[in-house]
Amino acid sequence: MDFIERIQALSKKVPQISANLATEEATKNALVMPFLHSVLGYDVFDPNEVIPEFTADVGTKKGEKVDYALVKDGVIQILIECKKYGDPLSIKHANQLFRYFSVTNARLAILTNGAQYQFYTDLDAPNKMDDKPFLTLDLEELDEHVVPEIKKLTKSSFDVDSVVDAAGELKYLNQIKKILLEQFSDPDEEFVKFFTSKVYEGVQTAKVKSQFLEITTKALKQFLNDSINARLKSAIGDGGKHAVKVEALESSSESNNSPEKSKVHTTEEEIEGFNIVKAILRQKVEVQRVCARDTQSYFGILLDDNNRKPLCRLWFNTKQKYISIFDEEKNETRHPIDTIDDIFNFSEELQNTLALYE
Image (cartoon, rainbow, N blue to C red; front, side, top):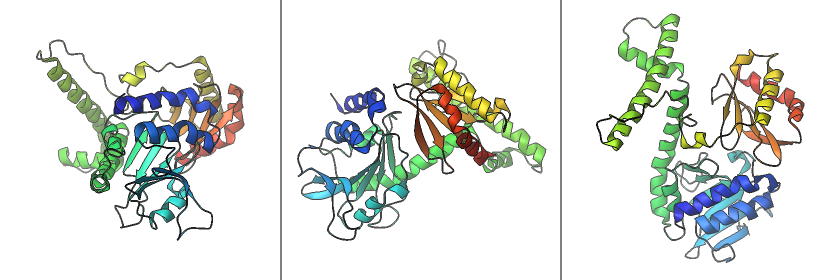
């Protein structure tokens, strides 16, 4: 298999085994070690290449370890800290990586829960790990733009200087893309104000702001549609005579017209779970504001159909069912449930999450 096929094979494996990944050790054995071996190309059984439970000599708490250290040419190159599958990845939970980063030769660090991999370096201050990753790989939602960057980290292609040089652009590129995605989906006041000032010379009263919020949102969606249709015409090469009209995108990440969307099947259990969540929250908010977006991996429930206001996620595609609850930092925590009615046990948590946005 070539590189992309190896990543895709591991990606397909995640939903097949996720229900049985109840511990960090299970996650490492089933997902992290295969990633190191089949994707990055390291021999996980050779301690000259992969050191498990790596301990540095100085600068750390007694007995503290990182899960893996990757070695190339006899030098520690990458440090890896693992969490259990489903656990949110938060840099505050990776103190070992911070401490070890400053006392080893490693310029790269990975924080992972087996499905998501966050890659860090020291762009902001020399020999000090950054707070934000320069690259994120999500095996459950593969991004074709990320794959070539992961290939640069393989043992056969790895060159630390070139990786770090490219990391700066990647870090800010990904952050800007994230901001653009949020603005195209739900533009904020400053974003709308910028465009309004370019086309409207009057005073931006509350009424004008409201009007241009609607106009800007429509313009953004039409701009996306026009761009996609132009690319379709170019690809077809017939002047657009047989081009298919692309409808307005509700979300750049979860479009109804995306290839992934065609694979989504909403089950009766998911609909029932959605109705229970609405029943719990309707005493606090108008029920029509509680919206759903189904994906291949989970059934998402949002406030105002806004992906920046997640209320919960229902993970019903595996034998063990879960409900995910979000905290004030939008960290996701999965809770196992046995029946759909168990969602009622999380009424308080759901209402607390709703209160964060109200």
